[in-house]
Image 1 (cartoon, rainbow, N blue to C red):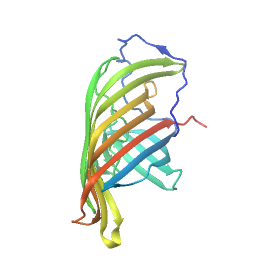
Image 2: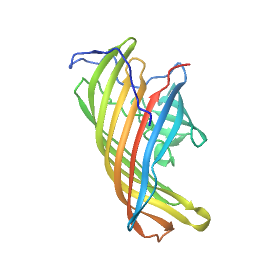
Image 3: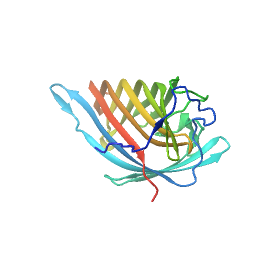
Image 4: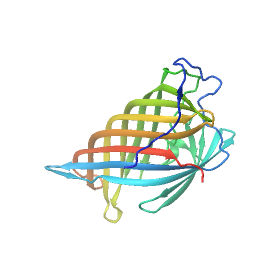
Length: 255
């Protein structure tokens, strides 16, 4: 698994340093930003003495162009699979704090499969090193295979403010809980679905370029357990299930 390594000549600012003159907010980009993401996960079901599911590692490249809009920011995103090839492009309306407002012109509450956690969420007020704030991200949908929801409640802490040549870096750490119901068609022609309803701890570390107003890197780890099923719509037997995942994302240098 790729590890995110940030090599910087750092000067740690005083613990009470104010960032009022450099608000933690996303800004429009002059160029296309490119990120590499590594997602190592295990989605599993426990059926009697057997555990169904194998560890999986996927890699994607994410390109972003951020521009100003009446609602705050317009973010064009293209995802490219580096292991199993695929390409997907979407347009998001996002606040300067990273809250997703709409996806492809549809309000986020009605946008199926939208990335509501596109960006780590930033506080709406100026903060000092050591300050904390709470954030909740929540959405519900009804898919063809059944209901789905995503709910995360985190407490973020402004851990450190670091200076290097041309970069002022805010290090944010978050901890909280995630509740998730997801699923899909195992065999749509036979009406066979899978779903899981799981919950557990989630932890985040975010490196944010304050001067540029851009995400530099982030890591999200979760360990969720609950119940789920695989079988015919409306009647598959339930069984214990879980999802363990670590997603590491970092910006690629300009070519």
